[in-house]
Length: 165
Image 1 (tube, helix red, strand yellow):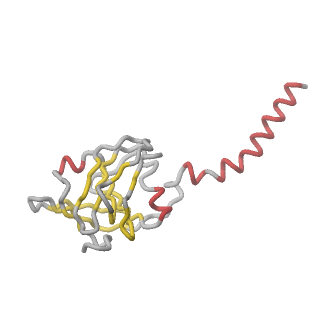
Image 2 (cartoon, rainbow, N blue to C red):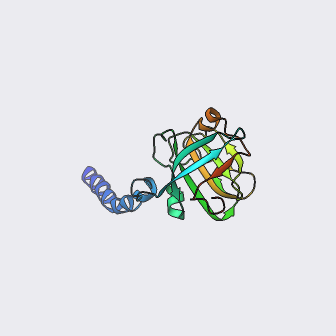
Image 3 (tube, rainbow, N blue to C red):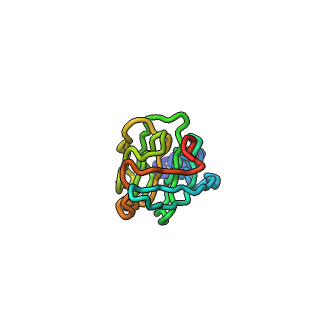
């Protein structure tokens, strides 16, 4: 009887928790249910005048920003995600549920790169910030900024950015 009772409680517990687990599926897999994001070209012009071209997905809404690059194992070269902040804010990013290491490029309202966080630690909940208010943050594959010589002060342009065209 004890075994049957214990099994009955276990089954009841599973039955009652299943709806809760299903309801939290969005919390566990935010990128899985996300609609396809708008894409746009983005250019970073370095101090030598060389242009580095990217195709970026645009995260405008809070839901899109929260999902970000979560559950993506990699970010292909020449692509990324652009997080827009309107109005500009002291943006803070993290790597929760993100298995791919990234470079984060914090973009000032005037379009200049104000800070770069290179080779982020996957799954970290450490807050990563720029230097002041950001109009946007660009996430690209880890090592992209170093490989291309992209540094603080370089200029980012895209029709997706509200202040720089």
